[in-house]
Structure formats: structure tokens, C-alpha cells
Image (cartoon, rainbow, N blue to C red; front, side, top):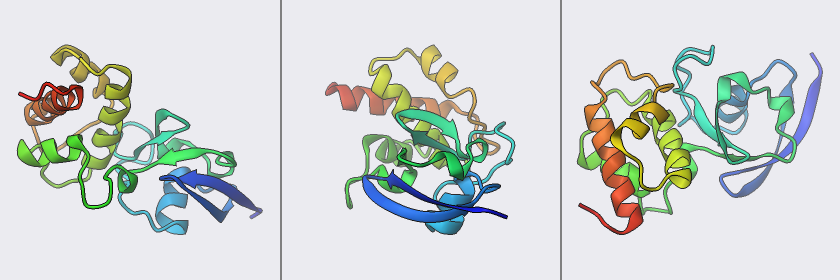
Length: 160
């Protein structure tokens, strides 16, 4: 199978890697770059567990081919925190106990981050709609929604 040499920016760092034509962005992140925070939930784009930020947009990493990554900017869960300082979304997920098994959490956090960058003052309905493509099999979503709403308030500077 042919291989491609790709240069991309991942979490702010330029990286070079080789991938086969059948490898997805999810495969590249986990198997070539050893960034295992992005999870494989379904492999068909239905659950959102593998959501990453690709050129500024949230995408399901299982649906993007690695060969498409030349020159791309990719943000994963590993790049969300600032050193030891958690991103407000990460901290609020802890504060609100908004995770259980953790398979969906990286994808939800990435989706929520991308959403809040476009809509920093959302309604609860808007948050629920934005996260509708991210399935969680453990929680009832209420803690997740409260965590995102609380993080949005903190990020606006009006923490509740």
C-alpha cells in the first residue's frame, strides 16, 4: 500500500509522519503520533468520540484520511490544557463530575471548545444542539451541559 510523507501542525507543533492511504486521521493520531487521547468510539462518524479540531473546525477523525493532512492544523485533547493548567472546560467537567468512563469526553470537550469559540454566550438549548453529535453511553448529559454552561460563563469572565 502506498505511503505518504505528511507535514502538519498538531497542537501547535510541526510534525512529520508517514501514513498509508487507508489510514484515517484517528489512526495517524493514535498509531503514528502516539496521541491516544482521541478515542475510537464507532469508526463510522456516528458517535463523536474522535472529534478533533481540524483547520479550525470540529471533525470526526475517523472520517478524515491521513493523506489529507498536508499543511493542516490539528488540535487534539492533548493540546487543550496549558501545561499543568487545565482549560476551563476541562476543569468544569471535573467540578461537575461530567464524565464517567471517559471514552466520549475528549470529543465532547473538543466540540464544546470549538462551539464556545463561535458562541461564547450560548443558551442551554444551543449547547445541547451543538453537542448532539457526541454520544455518551454513561451519563444523562445534564452534568455535561451544566459543565459547558459554567465554563462558558467563566470564559466570558462572569463565572457563576
